[in-house]
Image 1 (cartoon, rainbow, N blue to C red):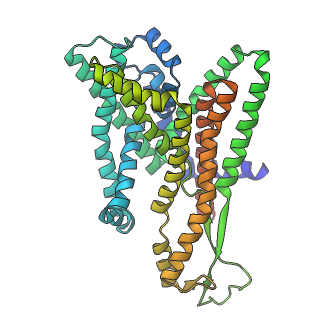
Image 2 (image 1 turned 30 degrees about the vertical axis):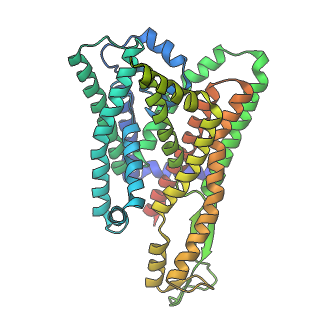
Image 3 (image 1 turned 180 degrees about the horizontal axis):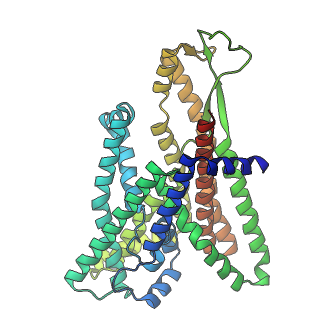
Amino acid sequence: MKNVWKKIVLALKDRSIRNRIFFVVFALVVFRLLSVIPVPGVDRIALEQYLNSSQFFGILNVFSGGGFSTLSIVMLGVSPYITASIIMQLLTIIFPKVKEMYQENGEIGRQKFNKISRTLTIPLAFLQGFGFIKLFVSQGVMGPFTTFEYIVNVLIVAAGAMLVMWIGELITEYGIGNGASMIIFAGIVAAFPTNVSQTLFAYDPSQLPVYIGFLVVGILIIAGVVLVSEAERPVPVTYARQVRGVGSSTPTYLPIRMNQAGVMPIIFALSLLMFPRIIGSVLTASTNPTFITIGQNITKIFVDNQLVYGILNFVLVVFFTYFYTAVTFDPDQVATNLQKNGAFIPGVRPGIPTSEYLASVTVRITLFGSLFLGLIAVLPLIVQSISGITSLAIGGTALLIVVSVVTDLIKKIDAQISMREY
């Protein structure tokens, strides 16, 4: 604990790190102010009743950073940008030129990659804004609108999504941590006092075992996420050319983390799981009997059936853990860099054998990390099915995101401090 306080003091004393921290705080305050400005024509009473009747919109509120609960101008949050990022990351596997642009062309390639992702966010924001506004108008939460008012509201919501994306990009560039994750984190933390007060007011002594069980699950999630985030496999590395003055007793190794993807697999999985629910809700709200039937069937499969939802969530988390690891960690590039620096792994030949060895180690160690993340993602659903409290699924997902973001933020601050000291 003493070491933690020491690092906090060092971070606040360093002007560069302090400015980055203050910039993140300022950007999140601006975002929270925007999240309380509602779009025109919202019926607050009807909105509250509608949101309380659906667990799905509770998860959407988590992703919007809290802006969905008021149908604010930034109610889409980072969802369109995350969806665009998923599409671009998938294209790196399908098209080798996209992967080359992202991994091999350096900073210029990454800037071009991010520019395409931002451009793709625009049509996705319009599509999601159109779908949600149509849904809320059909449910009596908004409107009724004229055609002009409908277009204006879609433009406002889409512009709000682009503004949130810009704020997230600024946090990533000038602050500390991933901007999209920080915005989601801010919305969860901002809703925490309200959730605690509601739980206290609704306290029922007969539900005490459930509350204790939820507390135990929460502690296990926190401990497990921290443990897996810190776990790594050290791969020994030997340099053929030893530098005079450096003792051979000091081991050199290449650390391969068990979970290199962080919280992104959870966010990606939940983003994709939103689409069947959104499509089902929009089709159900239409006036065409065929569309209504299709929408009801989609809702029955992906919304009402918790078993199907849990299995899909688990599979997607495991898949995106491997997928994100494959995008961020390239064994071929690492093997090439080791060979150029005259380094090799004992017992493994340089070049292609080293790349294959690193790939096999990464696949094995990522298996445990992905299964753990998948289990943690569906564990709240298991607890919910036992206890019958629907808010546990939302709370478990939010807790998982908060712990992962805080762990990653601490690491980045620690890295900044170490760099300054060096």
